[in-house]
Structure formats: C-alpha cells, structure tokens
Image 1: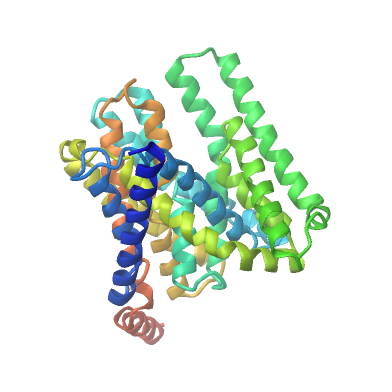
Image 2: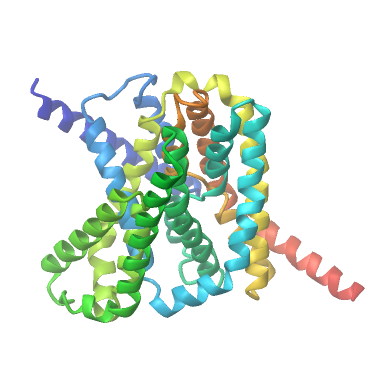
Length: 394
C-alpha cells in the first residue's frame, strides 16, 4: 500500500480506539490521559504493534496540542491578572526550585552521573507539565477556581525559567565557551521579554486584527499567529508553550471569547494526540532497567510538588481544599522533562532517557488520579474534621 494509505489506516484506527478509551475513562470517572499514554506505549517503539508510518504525524500533532492547550488557557486571563499572579508567586517560584530541582540534582550525583547529569535531572524534576495541567484544569472544571491563578503563576515562572535553563544546559552538553553560552541565553531572554512586552502593552491592538463574528477567519488567524509566535520562540530556545500562552493573554474581549469557542474542538483533538505521542515515542523495552529508581524519584518529588502548591496557595489566601487542589495539580511532569532528557541522553548520562520516561509516566498516571482526590467526599470530610479540631484547640 501507498505510504499515505498506511498513515490514514494507522491514524484512523488509533483515533477510533482513543475514542473508546475516552468513553471508558468517562464511565469510570477518571481522566483519559493515562489510557492515552498506555495506548501510545502499546503501539510505540518496543510495543506490541508499533505504528511506524504515522509517527511523524503524531509528533507534529503533539506540538500543536501543547500550543493549543496553553493558548486557550491564556485566553482565560488578562495581562493584569498575569502580572499580579507573577508578583505574588515570586517566593513560590524560588521554593518550587529548591524543593524539586535540588532533590533531582542530588539523585543524579548519587547515581554517578556527574555535574551535567545533575543539572539535567534537576530540571526534569523541577518543571511541571503545562500541557497536562491545562487539560486537567479543564477536565475537572477548575479553570475558574480561586487556586487556578496560583497554579498558572507557578507554571509560567517555570516556563519562563526554561528560557535561561535550556540554553545553559545545551551549552554544558556541547561544551561551548562561557561567552557563547551567555550570548545564547541573552538572545532567549530578550525574545521572552519582547513577546511579554508586546502582549501586555499592545494586546488590544492585536485583538483588532481579528473579527469575532467570522468563525473561519478567526480560527485561521488565531491559530496561525499562535503557531508563528510559538515557532519563533522555539527557534531561540524559548518554550513554545510560553509563546502560545502569551498570545492567549494578548487577546481580549469578544475576540478571546469567540476564539475559545471555535478552537476548543481542535484543542481537544490535538491534546489527545499529544499524550498518545508521548507513549509512542517511549521505547517500552528500556523502561524496566530504570523502573525502581524512576518510581522512587517520582514519589519523592511529587510530594515536594504538593508542598510547593500548598504553600503557594496558602500565601495567596486560598482555603485548605484549594491548597490541596493546587498541590496535587502540580505533581505531573511531561513535555519539558522529555526535552531535557533528549538533550543529555547519550552524552553524560545515557540512562537518563529511560529514567525520565519512567519518571514522567509515573507522575502523569499518578498525578491525574491524585488531582481528583480533593473533590471526593471522604477528603472533604477529613478536611472539615481537621478544621473543626484545630478550631477547638484554638
């Protein structure tokens, strides 16, 4: 058969299977993300039935999925809300780094991976998956919750920090001079500042480029601008997610509202493709060797992420249930962790890629389940009992 025919068959069969898995997840009452990941592992490299022809399609689709998830999340918030959230969460950002990056770096040193491996594993454990969190917030109906701006502030701080981190890590891996590394970092940071300035200062002008009354031009225009900015950001080692999120922040009023409505179906499609591709790109045969270290590290740094979110929400004046929701929502790692592992794998730490795969899979599967815990009756009853006990002691 022709290559195009094979791609259509593979993509069609997998999308249809994902639909059935989504219905099963809905009936059980959990997020479909773990099902999508397992499906990717089954049909990926080292799986039971590898889908080779459609790999490139899913890779491109996964990039679009992350971009759309973050862009539509950005549409929910104004530029002022973003700045206020970043100012309030400065301490939380530092705490996030200390509680999560440092344990990862120490773990790498214990495994004997040296300074480059330590910097890499520290980043893998530090940065939360913006794509997974965005989908979780939407699936659980928490986009309008009081703790959500706190979660987003932590995510944006991490993604902005990647503008410094990724060029530095790349320079360490390649072994370039200090001057060359400094130039790369300066370019990346300059692009982030420029995009942020344009989004905050001229967002109202950007919104005038689109009309909220014509769906087709609106879809093409907003999607095109978002992908353009995300691609330019990626070109200079800045997160594409940051660029997409800031485009969403720049749009406002009826344009933002209409863009959410017309782009939501596309977001749902490509977000699902993103999670399947992660499984497809993971070689299942290499996972067993790093199973125990990966799970142990995941459990340790999931606990530190819960502490990060809880403390950040408490500082923002959020109630106890919202603090726990923030903590559990931040436990998942994903796209950035895999990118970091890809930069270093085969250089200073060849075992880093399978460890990162086990680590990310553990946090995503466990984290998507834990995210629902604060909404359960038993958890709410436990919080009420503890609050009553604290009040009686006081």
